Length: 324
Image 1 (cartoon, helix red, strand yellow):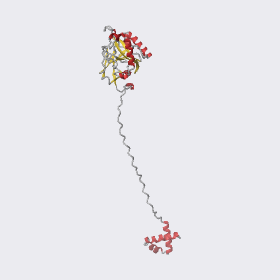
Image 2 (cartoon, one colour):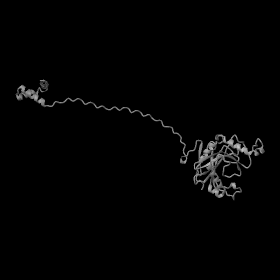
Image 3 (cartoon, helix red, strand yellow):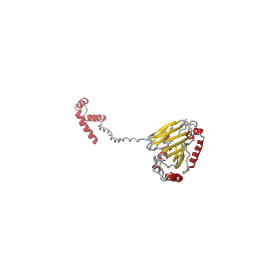
Image 4 (spheres, one colour):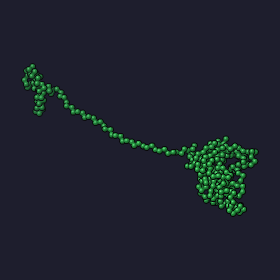
Protein backbone atom coordinates (compact mmCIF):
# COMPACT_ATOMS: atom_id res chain seq x y z
CA UNK A 1 0.00 0.00 0.00
CA UNK A 2 2.78 2.35 0.79
CA UNK A 3 4.24 1.79 -2.66
CA UNK A 4 0.94 2.48 -4.33
CA UNK A 5 0.48 5.71 -2.41
CA UNK A 6 3.95 6.77 -3.46
CA UNK A 7 3.12 6.07 -7.10
CA UNK A 8 -0.19 7.98 -6.89
CA UNK A 9 1.66 10.99 -5.56
CA UNK A 10 4.05 10.81 -8.50
CA UNK A 11 1.09 10.52 -10.89
CA UNK A 12 -0.57 13.54 -9.37
CA UNK A 13 2.61 15.57 -9.79
CA UNK A 14 3.05 14.30 -13.30
CA UNK A 15 -0.48 15.20 -14.25
CA UNK A 16 0.38 18.83 -13.82
CA UNK A 17 2.98 18.56 -16.57
CA UNK A 18 0.92 16.22 -18.76
CA UNK A 19 -2.31 18.21 -18.53
CA UNK A 20 -2.36 18.85 -22.22
CA UNK A 21 -1.43 15.35 -23.33
CA UNK A 22 -3.80 13.37 -21.10
CA UNK A 23 -7.09 14.83 -22.50
CA UNK A 24 -5.85 14.03 -25.99
CA UNK A 25 -5.03 10.52 -24.88
CA UNK A 26 -8.46 10.09 -23.35
CA UNK A 27 -10.17 11.43 -26.44
CA UNK A 28 -8.34 9.24 -28.93
CA UNK A 29 -8.37 6.05 -26.90
CA UNK A 30 -11.80 6.48 -25.21
CA UNK A 31 -10.46 4.39 -22.37
CA UNK A 32 -11.88 4.36 -18.88
CA UNK A 33 -9.99 6.39 -16.35
CA UNK A 34 -8.94 3.40 -14.41
CA UNK A 35 -7.30 1.85 -17.52
CA UNK A 36 -5.54 5.10 -18.32
CA UNK A 37 -4.13 5.30 -14.78
CA UNK A 38 -2.84 1.78 -15.08
CA UNK A 39 -1.26 2.59 -18.46
CA UNK A 40 0.36 5.74 -17.15
CA UNK A 41 1.61 3.96 -14.06
CA UNK A 42 3.09 1.24 -16.28
CA UNK A 43 4.85 3.82 -18.46
CA UNK A 44 6.15 5.62 -15.42
CA UNK A 45 7.47 2.41 -14.00
CA UNK A 46 9.24 1.67 -17.31
CA UNK A 47 10.69 5.22 -17.81
CA UNK A 48 14.09 5.56 -16.15
CA UNK A 49 14.14 8.36 -13.64
CA UNK A 50 17.15 10.61 -13.51
CA UNK A 51 19.34 9.86 -10.57
CA UNK A 52 20.11 12.66 -8.22
CA UNK A 53 23.85 12.69 -8.14
CA UNK A 54 25.64 14.08 -5.20
CA UNK A 55 28.44 16.40 -6.27
CA UNK A 56 31.82 14.70 -6.15
CA UNK A 57 33.96 16.11 -3.43
CA UNK A 58 36.60 18.49 -4.64
CA UNK A 59 39.88 16.63 -4.45
CA UNK A 60 42.05 17.99 -1.74
CA UNK A 61 45.14 19.65 -3.06
CA UNK A 62 48.01 18.56 -0.87
CA UNK A 63 49.40 21.51 0.94
CA UNK A 64 53.12 21.74 0.54
CA UNK A 65 54.73 22.33 3.85
CA UNK A 66 57.42 24.94 3.67
CA UNK A 67 60.86 23.44 3.29
CA UNK A 68 62.94 24.37 6.30
CA UNK A 69 65.71 26.69 5.32
CA UNK A 70 69.10 25.06 5.32
CA UNK A 71 71.40 27.18 7.40
CA UNK A 72 74.13 28.64 5.23
CA UNK A 73 77.47 27.27 6.30
CA UNK A 74 80.06 29.93 6.74
CA UNK A 75 83.22 29.16 4.77
CA UNK A 76 85.93 27.51 6.83
CA UNK A 77 88.90 29.85 7.09
CA UNK A 78 91.91 28.53 5.20
CA UNK A 79 94.75 27.42 7.40
CA UNK A 80 98.13 27.98 5.81
CA UNK A 81 99.80 24.64 5.30
CA UNK A 82 103.55 24.47 5.27
CA UNK A 83 104.54 22.89 1.99
CA UNK A 84 106.55 19.73 2.43
CA UNK A 85 109.82 19.26 0.68
CA UNK A 86 110.17 16.27 -1.68
CA UNK A 87 109.54 12.86 -0.10
CA UNK A 88 107.19 14.49 2.38
CA UNK A 89 109.97 16.06 4.48
CA UNK A 90 108.99 19.31 6.21
CA UNK A 91 111.33 21.81 7.83
CA UNK A 92 110.85 22.36 11.56
CA UNK A 93 109.29 25.67 12.72
CA UNK A 94 111.84 28.47 12.47
CA UNK A 95 113.77 26.64 9.76
CA UNK A 96 113.87 27.57 6.05
CA UNK A 97 114.35 25.24 3.12
CA UNK A 98 117.62 25.27 1.20
CA UNK A 99 118.58 23.47 -1.98
CA UNK A 100 122.03 23.66 -3.55
CA UNK A 101 123.34 21.41 -6.32
CA UNK A 102 120.52 19.00 -5.46
CA UNK A 103 121.48 18.87 -1.76
CA UNK A 104 118.39 19.57 0.37
CA UNK A 105 118.54 20.97 3.90
CA UNK A 106 116.88 23.34 6.37
CA UNK A 107 118.72 26.20 8.06
CA UNK A 108 117.80 28.32 11.13
CA UNK A 109 116.25 31.61 10.05
CA UNK A 110 116.76 33.23 13.45
CA UNK A 111 120.54 32.83 13.27
CA UNK A 112 121.17 33.62 9.60
CA UNK A 113 119.79 35.63 6.72
CA UNK A 114 120.20 32.97 4.06
CA UNK A 115 123.06 31.10 2.46
CA UNK A 116 125.51 31.15 -0.43
CA UNK A 117 126.64 28.13 -2.41
CA UNK A 118 129.70 27.25 -4.42
CA UNK A 119 131.21 24.22 -6.13
CA UNK A 120 134.83 24.49 -4.99
CA UNK A 121 137.27 23.26 -7.64
CA UNK A 122 139.80 20.52 -6.99
CA UNK A 123 143.22 21.44 -5.54
CA UNK A 124 146.13 19.03 -5.78
CA UNK A 125 149.41 18.81 -3.87
CA UNK A 126 151.32 20.22 -6.83
CA UNK A 127 149.24 23.41 -6.61
CA UNK A 128 149.65 23.92 -2.85
CA UNK A 129 152.67 23.73 -0.58
CA UNK A 130 150.61 22.50 2.38
CA UNK A 131 149.11 18.97 2.31
CA UNK A 132 146.09 20.09 4.41
CA UNK A 133 145.09 22.34 1.51
CA UNK A 134 144.47 19.40 -0.85
CA UNK A 135 140.84 18.83 -1.69
CA UNK A 136 138.67 17.27 -4.40
CA UNK A 137 135.87 19.22 -6.04
CA UNK A 138 133.29 19.73 -3.27
CA UNK A 139 130.13 21.66 -2.36
CA UNK A 140 130.43 24.50 0.15
CA UNK A 141 127.41 26.18 1.76
CA UNK A 142 127.98 29.35 3.81
CA UNK A 143 125.24 30.72 6.06
CA UNK A 144 125.04 34.45 5.38
CA UNK A 145 124.18 37.00 8.05
CA UNK A 146 125.28 34.52 10.71
CA UNK A 147 125.19 36.18 14.16
CA UNK A 148 128.36 34.72 15.66
CA UNK A 149 131.75 35.82 14.37
CA UNK A 150 134.79 33.58 14.51
CA UNK A 151 138.44 34.39 13.98
CA UNK A 152 139.23 31.16 12.14
CA UNK A 153 136.08 29.47 10.86
CA UNK A 154 133.20 30.42 8.59
CA UNK A 155 129.69 29.08 9.28
CA UNK A 156 130.18 26.46 6.58
CA UNK A 157 128.78 23.07 5.57
CA UNK A 158 130.80 21.02 3.11
CA UNK A 159 130.03 17.89 1.07
CA UNK A 160 133.07 15.88 -0.08
CA UNK A 161 133.10 12.92 -2.48
CA UNK A 162 134.93 10.17 -0.59
CA UNK A 163 136.46 8.33 -3.57
CA UNK A 164 137.85 11.54 -5.12
CA UNK A 165 139.25 12.68 -1.77
CA UNK A 166 140.97 9.33 -1.15
CA UNK A 167 142.41 9.40 -4.68
CA UNK A 168 144.12 12.72 -3.86
CA UNK A 169 145.17 11.79 -0.31
CA UNK A 170 145.21 8.17 0.84
CA UNK A 171 145.14 9.30 4.48
CA UNK A 172 141.50 10.29 3.99
CA UNK A 173 140.63 6.58 3.93
CA UNK A 174 142.02 6.32 7.48
CA UNK A 175 139.76 9.23 8.48
CA UNK A 176 136.74 7.53 6.91
CA UNK A 177 137.54 4.24 8.71
CA UNK A 178 137.95 6.05 12.03
CA UNK A 179 134.62 7.86 11.57
CA UNK A 180 132.85 4.55 10.87
CA UNK A 181 134.45 2.99 13.95
CA UNK A 182 133.41 5.90 16.17
CA UNK A 183 129.84 5.90 14.84
CA UNK A 184 129.59 2.16 15.45
CA UNK A 185 130.92 2.50 19.03
CA UNK A 186 128.76 5.45 20.09
CA UNK A 187 131.51 6.51 22.51
CA UNK A 188 130.11 9.47 24.52
CA UNK A 189 133.52 10.80 25.62
CA UNK A 190 136.10 10.36 22.85
CA UNK A 191 139.29 12.37 23.36
CA UNK A 192 138.99 13.65 19.78
CA UNK A 193 136.86 13.12 16.67
CA UNK A 194 138.30 12.37 13.18
CA UNK A 195 137.49 15.33 10.96
CA UNK A 196 137.79 16.95 7.55
CA UNK A 197 138.69 19.47 6.29
CA UNK A 198 142.20 19.28 7.69
CA UNK A 199 143.50 22.22 9.71
CA UNK A 200 147.09 23.14 10.48
CA UNK A 201 146.16 22.76 14.15
CA UNK A 202 144.94 20.18 16.67
CA UNK A 203 141.69 19.71 18.59
CA UNK A 204 142.18 21.35 21.97
CA UNK A 205 138.87 20.21 23.43
CA UNK A 206 136.06 17.78 22.64
CA UNK A 207 132.74 17.97 24.47
CA UNK A 208 128.96 17.72 24.03
CA UNK A 209 129.44 14.68 21.76
CA UNK A 210 126.08 13.65 20.29
CA UNK A 211 125.32 11.14 17.52
CA UNK A 212 122.83 12.24 14.90
CA UNK A 213 121.12 10.72 11.87
CA UNK A 214 120.54 12.83 8.79
CA UNK A 215 118.12 11.90 6.00
CA UNK A 216 120.47 9.53 4.18
CA UNK A 217 123.33 9.03 6.60
CA UNK A 218 124.59 9.47 10.14
CA UNK A 219 127.29 11.37 11.96
CA UNK A 220 128.46 12.96 15.19
CA UNK A 221 128.46 16.54 16.43
CA UNK A 222 130.75 17.95 19.10
CA UNK A 223 132.15 21.22 20.42
CA UNK A 224 135.81 21.83 19.76
CA UNK A 225 138.48 24.45 19.27
CA UNK A 226 141.55 24.06 17.10
CA UNK A 227 144.87 25.60 18.05
CA UNK A 228 148.59 25.47 17.50
CA UNK A 229 149.37 26.38 21.08
CA UNK A 230 147.72 26.27 24.48
CA UNK A 231 144.97 28.84 24.61
CA UNK A 232 141.75 29.41 26.56
CA UNK A 233 138.46 28.30 25.02
CA UNK A 234 137.08 31.50 23.55
CA UNK A 235 134.02 32.84 21.76
CA UNK A 236 136.11 33.86 18.75
CA UNK A 237 137.52 30.34 18.15
CA UNK A 238 135.22 27.60 19.52
CA UNK A 239 132.94 25.82 17.05
CA UNK A 240 130.07 23.37 16.76
CA UNK A 241 131.52 20.67 14.49
CA UNK A 242 129.78 17.84 12.64
CA UNK A 243 131.18 14.96 10.61
CA UNK A 244 129.18 12.18 8.97
CA UNK A 245 128.89 9.73 6.10
CA UNK A 246 126.04 8.99 3.71
CA UNK A 247 124.58 5.49 3.97
CA UNK A 248 126.21 4.47 0.68
CA UNK A 249 129.62 5.73 1.87
CA UNK A 250 129.91 8.01 -1.14
CA UNK A 251 129.95 11.42 0.61
CA UNK A 252 131.39 13.02 3.74
CA UNK A 253 129.20 15.72 5.35
CA UNK A 254 131.11 18.26 7.43
CA UNK A 255 130.16 21.45 9.29
CA UNK A 256 132.01 24.16 11.21
CA UNK A 257 129.55 26.50 12.93
CA UNK A 258 130.82 29.26 15.26
CA UNK A 259 129.11 29.32 18.66
CA UNK A 260 129.43 31.28 21.89
CA UNK A 261 128.72 30.86 25.60
CA UNK A 262 129.05 32.97 28.73
CA UNK A 263 131.52 30.49 30.19
CA UNK A 264 134.03 31.16 27.39
CA UNK A 265 136.43 34.10 27.36
CA UNK A 266 136.05 36.59 24.52
CA UNK A 267 139.37 36.00 22.78
CA UNK A 268 142.16 33.41 22.60
CA UNK A 269 144.49 36.30 23.33
CA UNK A 270 142.94 37.12 26.71
CA UNK A 271 145.52 36.70 29.45
CA UNK A 272 144.64 33.94 31.95
CA UNK A 273 144.19 35.26 35.52
CA UNK A 274 146.94 32.93 36.78
CA UNK A 275 149.36 33.95 34.02
CA UNK A 276 150.43 32.05 30.88
CA UNK A 277 153.07 29.86 32.48
CA UNK A 278 150.72 28.55 35.17
CA UNK A 279 147.92 28.14 32.58
CA UNK A 280 150.12 26.05 30.28
CA UNK A 281 151.44 23.91 33.15
CA UNK A 282 147.90 23.18 34.26
CA UNK A 283 146.36 22.90 30.79
CA UNK A 284 145.31 19.24 31.06
CA UNK A 285 143.25 20.00 34.17
CA UNK A 286 141.85 23.11 32.48
CA UNK A 287 140.81 21.05 29.46
CA UNK A 288 139.11 18.36 31.58
CA UNK A 289 137.31 20.93 33.73
CA UNK A 290 136.06 22.81 30.69
CA UNK A 291 134.74 19.65 29.04
CA UNK A 292 132.92 18.65 32.25
CA UNK A 293 131.45 22.13 32.69
CA UNK A 294 130.31 22.19 29.06
CA UNK A 295 128.56 18.85 29.48
CA UNK A 296 126.51 20.35 32.29
CA UNK A 297 125.33 23.23 30.09
CA UNK A 298 121.91 22.92 28.45
CA UNK A 299 122.05 23.01 24.63
CA UNK A 300 119.83 26.12 24.60
CA UNK A 301 122.38 28.13 26.60
CA UNK A 302 124.75 28.19 23.63
CA UNK A 303 124.33 30.66 20.83
CA UNK A 304 123.00 29.51 18.46
CA UNK A 305 121.23 26.71 20.32
CA UNK A 306 122.93 23.38 19.71
CA UNK A 307 119.47 21.90 19.12
CA UNK A 308 118.85 24.35 16.27
CA UNK A 309 122.14 23.38 14.63
CA UNK A 310 121.32 19.70 15.21
CA UNK A 311 118.03 20.12 13.32
CA UNK A 312 119.92 21.68 10.43
CA UNK A 313 122.36 18.78 10.17
CA UNK A 314 119.59 16.18 10.55
CA UNK A 315 117.74 17.72 7.59
CA UNK A 316 120.44 17.05 5.00
CA UNK A 317 119.72 14.86 2.01
CA UNK A 318 122.64 14.31 -0.38
CA UNK A 319 121.72 12.77 -3.74
CA UNK A 320 124.03 10.25 -5.40
CA UNK A 321 124.81 12.64 -8.26
CA UNK A 322 125.39 15.76 -6.12
CA UNK A 323 128.97 16.05 -7.39
CA UNK A 324 129.66 14.93 -10.97
